[in-house]
Length: 130
Image (cartoon, rainbow, N blue to C red; front, side, top):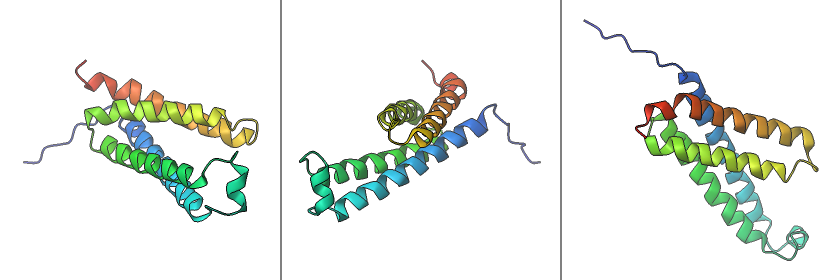
């Protein structure tokens, strides 16, 4: 006798949110590695005298955190849902700063992040016991 798996509503939204956070984390990791590779060059002087290496480490750590959160959303960890909502909101807010430099890319990224927030809040929060 086989047991048929119950299909939960919103399963696709949770998968979308997890994939988006993993992809965004991978991009942050690549940005961090690029910044660490370009430290102490002419590009480093463009960052208002700040240290490009420090920004590289920040991007690298944030990217790793995003990948971990996305992986735990796949596993349906309760804490990952709330962390994913916070990370997606943070991603949308950060892209607001780039809207005048890259308007189409920023608007697209903000929309994707907000769709991830929608999926996580609509279909994942109801499973948590709050």
